[in-house]
Image (cartoon, rainbow, N blue to C red; front, side, top):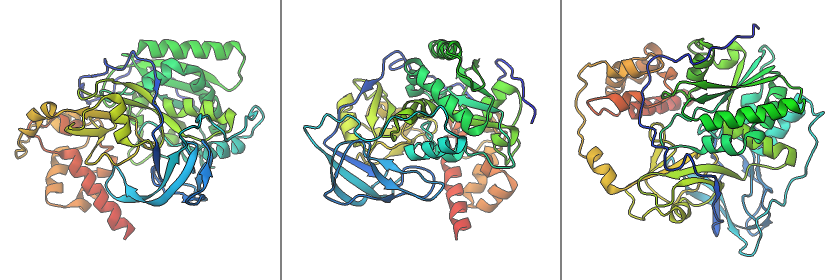
Length: 455
């Protein structure tokens, strides 16, 4: 397959420019969140089948110990985020609503909570198959929010050939800065993770795409690349490239358009054009965990919003209760709305009785006064203004899709109007003067179609 040259600053069509709202956290170093007294680890916290618990109630576990395993390819194991005792294996509420089977661990109050599981290993001579298995063993999923199993993302079909690893460092969602801080503070780990991913996929080139409003991240990664080159690390060429700041630049198809000036055909993935895309946080975590032989037990989370007294990017153990996180960050109990993720693609939750999971990149807190103007807005009929069409980065017709959704003509949405191409970026909802919750309608339609297909 031909190795594509890449352009500098090629902007994709459409999209929007929401306020960045990153000032409160972008320049603050990552801090570690204290350990809670109790942790809840949902078995279902990623795309694919949940793993099965391999420990029992009353059993002592140590931080990093595997507590759930799987043989299913589209699934990952889980590891204990804390040294303690298993209190329960039972149904607990999830951020998406349904109760899911979860492992509840009570932390030992006197424990140091250092990693006590795992053994350092030399991966210099590891085969791609060995590395892929090692990635699977970490329990890694995409930390950008999608939570797709990373080993499955890096697995290249026999009929495909990969030449480029594209690393997504755009972080275009307003408020979120966890990827930004990881790039600034953990650039060397990112480069190591890129090297492993390139060996697994066979890529000969790795490119980190970063929006041009993060010059410190660009400088940090370029310095890490220079250090790696000086050390003579052999796997392929590494680059860092600035791309224009625009939402949703973080979508893999939009980032590929910005870097290479090519469009991924409808219904296909980047691998069809010889590319694999991964998030910077995911690869930085792999760069740190794989040599240590450890699993994913924590992640960096942006905790911010008008309702947070101590905003910042925190290293949070997986399974930490959301209420504990908000109490430490100084969020009032009467906060009006909590969103997991960013404001454009994130999910509002109705209860604080849920934990931080592998896919939670941000926790946004809004006060009652922040929501007053929005709550006073009414939804009006579509006025056919075309704003949603002009903003949709995939070139869809959200207006027509919305009208079909209102009539519950979901099959027509999928077969005739390419509903499957929508990645729920929220641009259409953001620009709609009639305040129609378009992206929410599309989510419902896709869920109905999935249920019908499963039936």
